[in-house]
Length: 282
Image (cartoon, rainbow, N blue to C red; front, side, top):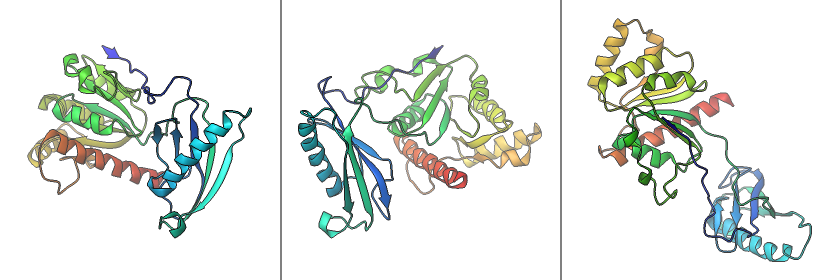
């Protein structure tokens, strides 16, 4: 069974008709706390997103609320631009310069950032669940795959998402997990951490024989790595493909084997790899 995701309402708690002010870093020169295009929404009592925090964001929120009150009497409300040097006068020492654009938001939703990576995650055990929680706030797409539908409890994500799946997460309870590999986009990341070493092995072989792998991680020890590599060589998997294997997974030097520790380490590793891929593509 394939369970489709539900859209995530980011702005619960504000009146449905509240006009939101979107504040965007429309221009960035030099060092700044966020990249050009970063934005936030400012409501009556809430904010969503961030333009970098600090005194710049504090002032931007106050400005947005003043403009919101003024724009309530104006039709149409013209966008407002401000320039700021990120120096001592602003209580920041970045040294760069930014331009902020204020405007009424067409809807109460933040723009969806481009995904950093598309991950096929095989395994819904303790580490898999912890990893999905760690990745949930990040701009990535996840296909979460397991044979056991009961391993995907809705309440694992409550109350953060009200018991619903985030829109960037596809939950796939399927009888043949390996068949999902062919559905991944080119350059996808793969992470295998199922309940079965035999399933890990067969999934890994299918992934390694795929044409376009962005990254392939396998949870396990150095002993598991050596055993799997030997068996894959015997089955004719090429050395160039085997070089793509990352096992053990996670940032080296982080102690602890609790699921949350492993998940945090792996999430950081995925961000590192995505950053390297982005630099190469750029």
